[in-house]
Image (tube, rainbow, N blue to C red; front, side, top):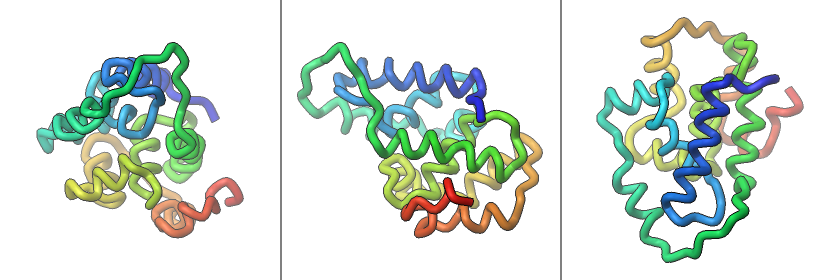
Length: 161
């Protein structure tokens, strides 16, 4: 499944966020911050909650790291991006969008950004509900059962469904 052009832009912005924060890698935290830099559904939801992720930015900036020319995705973000296709399938979308990636983060108990969002009061179903206020989302209930179950997602079951 193809990525939506807006999602590709967010991924590119994730690299710029990582560079700005002197990180040697691109993680789900960088992706989360990059969503704020473009016009997408997660950005609208985060903006409605007045989330600017300042504490997260300060935490990432506090590590004293050298800038390197090569940036790589963490296994965690790579796994989330791959699972994004499953969430696009749940909602019968032809392309993977940024909201699919955020849903993948929230459903994965091993996602750093997903856990960060959970700690700030955002879970899978709350985010889905907020998305439904912005756009029509009809889900395949069978697939959504698997996609919203943190244990099943964490053991890597999604690619086999």
